[in-house]
Length: 161
Image 1 (cartoon, rainbow, N blue to C red):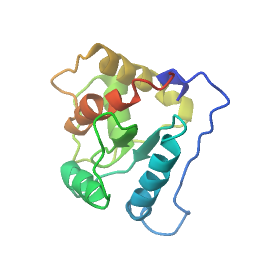
Image 2: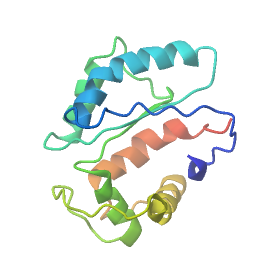
Image 3: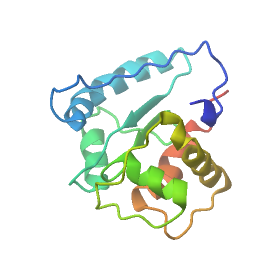
């Protein structure tokens, strides 16, 4: 979040993580998404808040996951609504590998290595922000990452306002 420019340390960051060992994390996200959106919309009417959702698509097409999540809402997300869905095809490590190396990755592969330390992803986050802010996306950018940069990142543009 700091790399996105969030400087206000008094803002609350809440993580709704799935309980360990209780099944697929995607099921947790799917079952709680509509509730979290309702809560966010009620809170956002009197505070400035953002809802960032991370969920792997796994064997499903990314668009099918987006449609499934949106179909559970009473009203689809508006373009200016501060609800961003980050959905890599298999794992976030695929995006990190691409952002770290700039080399083409295969989104169907699910075996890109996890990083040893969380801070090891910082150069990749910097590259993501560079791509998102300058509008340039190389041809070899993974489709699911390209979608996030083009459709979801603009929802975060006023993160510090």
